[in-house]
Image (cartoon, rainbow, N blue to C red; front, side, top):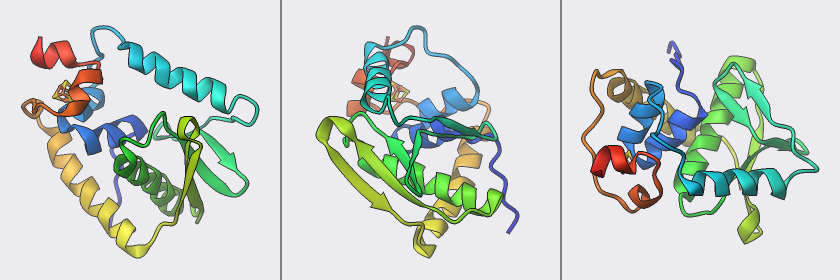
Length: 166
Ligand code: SF4
């Protein structure tokens, strides 16, 4: 199988699991009209919770790895509300590192506000899920127009709220 990640970076990948329209905006570099305060809060949690041990690592402008905790690729999230999306995003990192860099690593999700952690291993099933997702994402993201908005709880904290529902 030929793998092509097509600029599906961490932000696009994570957003896609929550809202395909939001992911389309990020993929096409449409910036939100103004930053939502919750984005700042997210950044603050990021910056303060792991200030001492943090070492953000960019890989090919695709991945933005928050830090390595021992041998684990760690991803920090503000809350576990989008836990499933966070797990898939981390699985995508592990998948990319394995197939593009030849690194077979395990991961860990960190929810510092909730003092919770969750380990993740890239199983064959998870790899297949990532491959199917990437195929699907390419179709949606390459389209000329974004998918229609669908009202979901995340809209309330989304920076495109006004664009979609203003
Ligand atoms: S406001 Fe809602 S529909 Fe629009 S991009 Fe954000 S999450 Fe998606």
